[in-house]
Length: 348
Ligand SMILES: C[S@@+](CC[C@H](N)C(=O)[O-])C[C@H]1O[C@@H](n2cnc3c(N)ncnc32)[C@H](O)[C@@H]1O
Image 1 (cartoon, protein in one colour):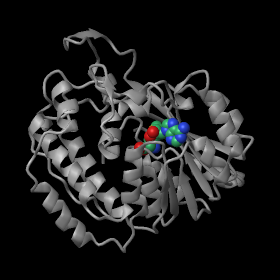
Image 2 (tube, helix red, strand yellow):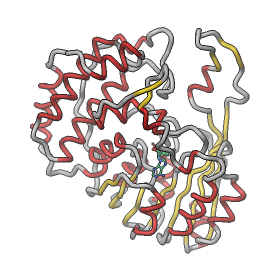
Image 3 (cartoon, protein in one colour):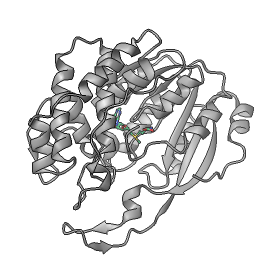
C-alpha cells in the first residue's frame, strides 16, 4: 500500500471493530485515499462504494474494492512478469521526475516510462487496467525518494531508491465486490443510498492533489505542463478542494453532513483539523446519537524528521510530535452508539 499522509493505517482495526458491531450491510468510504478503510469494510462482508477525487485512488479502488473472483489473476500475473521484463526508455516520467526533479532514480524512471506506455497498449478491462496501474504505483512508491509527500524530494537519494523497480500483483481482497467513483464528495453525498458512510476529509490546507501529483500524473499519463522545483502539475494551482481552505471547509463539511441520508456515520477528525471537535459534535448531533473515541498518536513522518532549508540543514523545530485523532460514531440507536464507543483513549 502506498505511503499516504492522513492514511488510517493504524486506525483501521479500531474502525473495523466498531463497524462490525453495527447493523449495516452497505457502506461508502467517501474520501477513500488509499482505500484501506473500504478494504476493511469489504473484509467484514459489506458492499462498499469507494470514492475520492484522485485518479490514483480510483485505480486503488478498482483493485481492492471492485475486483471480484471473476478476475483472471493468472493472466494478470503473466502480464506483470511481461511488464517487469521490459527494457527502460526515456519519456515524460524520467525527464520530469528523475532529471528535472528527483523523486525516482533515472534507471527506475525509464522502466516506469516503458511499463506505463505498455499498459495503455494492452487490451484490458477497466478492473484489469486498475490492477496493473496499482501494481506500477505501488512499485514506484517502494523506490521513491521522498518523506511520503511529493511537495519535495530528499536532497540525498533515499536508500530504498537504489533498489530496482519490481511490480507485484496486488493481493486480492476477500468480500463482496463493490464500486468506485471519482466525484466531489458534496455532489455524491445526497445521492448515496447506503447504511453507513465513513468520512475522512482533508483536515488542513495541505492539498492531496498537489501532495501526490506524481501518482496523479502516473495514472492519468497526460504529460501535463509543470512548475517549480517539485515539478507539480500546472492544474495543482486551479484544482482546489473546499476542504483545504480554512474559510470554506466548515461550510463544506456542514453541507456534506446535512445532505447524508445514511443512518450510520463514522467520522475521523484530528485535533489539528480546521473543524474543532465541539463544532463537529454540534453538526453530527443533528444526524443522530453521537459517541466519540479519542486516540493519541505520533504525527506524520515529516514532523518527526523536522524542518530543513533547501540545502538540507535543520533550521527549525516542529512544535509538537504527537496529536490526537477523534473517531465519531453517529446513529439512530443510542445504546449501541454508547456500547461501541465505550473505553475510549486508545493509543496509536
Ligand atoms: C485524509 S485523506 C483520506 C485518507 C484515507 N482514509 C486513507 O486511509 O487512505 C482525504 C482524501 O480526500 C480526498 N478529497 C479531497 N477533497 C475531496 C472532495 N471534495 N471530494 C472527494 N474527495 C476529496 C483526497 O484526495 C484524499 O485522498
